[in-house]
Image 1 (spheres, helix red, strand yellow):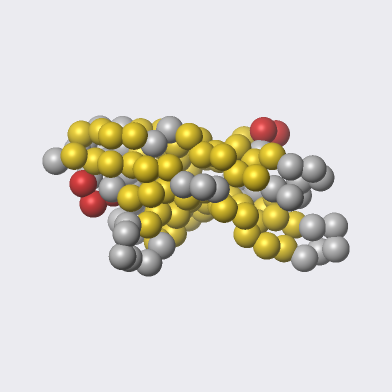
Image 2 (image 1 turned 90 degrees about the horizontal axis):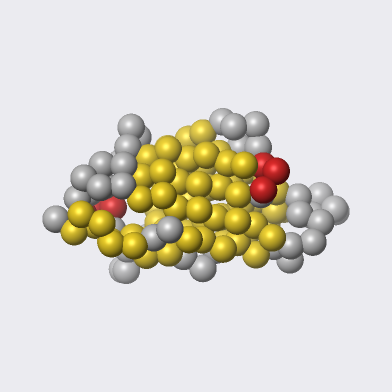
Length: 120
């Protein structure tokens, strides 16, 4: 079983920066694409950014040019550098990863979430 643990959330003023980290642990880890999503209470979870094992990235239009996703495959970790934060970025941010089992079956593992609050 894979466990994802996020860190780095907090309170920041508009225009500020935060860096989120997420580390995956578990036995016989086979990970695929990793990413970050966010959710505001009462709204659907929104995909923010993803990164493949080969480093291909993808971003939501709302964060392009402000957020950067990076990964360290050796550490089974993914990071989200957030700059130019806006109040509308306030949400719980979740780390996620495709997990590939020995049988070839895949599923998505999720972290517990970390709160990011941007004050105006």
